[in-house]
Image 1 (cartoon, rainbow, N blue to C red):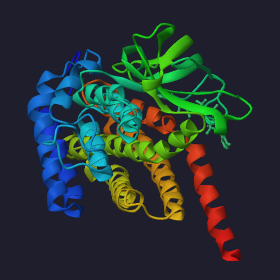
Image 2 (image 1 turned 180 degrees about the horizontal axis):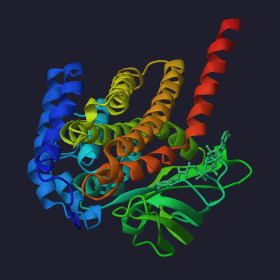
Image 3 (image 1 turned 180 degrees about the vertical axis):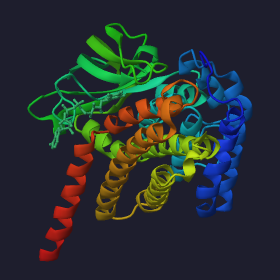
Length: 419
Ligand SMILES: Cc1cc2nc3c(=O)[nH]c(=O)nc-3n(C[C@H](O)[C@H](O)[C@H](O)COP(=O)(O)OP(=O)(O)OC[C@H]3O[C@@H](n4cnc5c(N)ncnc54)[C@H](O)[C@@H]3O)c2cc1C
């Protein structure tokens, strides 16, 4: 909680999560259907009345997982095995990420890594009863999941991984090292990738679920100061035996799954970035309207008011673009549209990931500046927004990699003119 409060006590009651949502709703609700609006309202009520009272800001986020899970809020991309948790779909997942990030962006980061990065492949590839059970553990928030792609020397170049898999009787054996595994040190399930032949990763990549209890698995926490309540780690596999029932993708299929998963991952992640942007911006909008210097609210000075207005215009535009992309993903990809539309959707998700991550960082930085010293203290969540916006820039692929994918899209669009 707040260590020492120095903020004007008359301003404090205006900066509640309830008020942040009241402002957020004015800018986002008009573009949503009645069903989407009801989803947002229910989620906001849950966060204000059930989640926040149980949040201990001095503690890790993981104690909050079962509270989210009980209400079906660990993820909303896929149907839950408990039928009462509807509606679901990519747009609802983005709304969940956005609304939760406004209240607790660290919790949202950890939730997304568990529910989407680990949970989505479990949903898409229910290869065994074991996998179905693991997915239920994740969706209820009883257990924590993570994804292991990045290695010390293979970051953006994720395909050419060096972690290896060897076939053996009844399963496979993993060896290697993964880094930056979000939730790793607290995880029960590790959605993992390795290759049989490092010279031929595309044809030999496996995806499998490693479990905390398996011999040879070790996780160590990496110090990432931007997100103190989330555990990010190094994951080591030393001859970890994985039984057949935990293999979601055999040789080559692992590569396909990796790529099919990147688009929904990026879409979910841009929801979080947008929520972080709204968190910082609405705090600044309220605070600068209440804070007086030289006899009037600082918002009335053009250097502050125009800057916030400009950021609002940009954030509103990117939010609407992003929600539209989530809709497009749901409608076009899920309903089995042709391959070129899938590619188009991949480009769109990179565009929005790029823009949302960069913009939310700029907004958080600018809002901190517009609010003055108070935004550097723990008296508001703006500094938390600044810190976590840096993480969102890297997770799910760094900025240049999103541009690389957009650039490829441009090349294909122009190449199509020759056909
Ligand atoms: C807090 C945090 C959480 C994370 N969580 C996870 C997780 O849960 N699971 C997981 O597997 N990974 C995770 N990651 C890893 C993340 O996906 C990688 O950090 C990211 O893909 C970039 O890899 P890298 O850090 O090795 O940078 P590098 O790939 O070494 O890139 C360094 C720089 O070079 C640029 N660059 C690289 N290639 C190109 C190119 N072809 N063209 C132009 N520029 C290029 C990059 O954009 C970047 O600016 C996490 C990272 C962080 C920091």
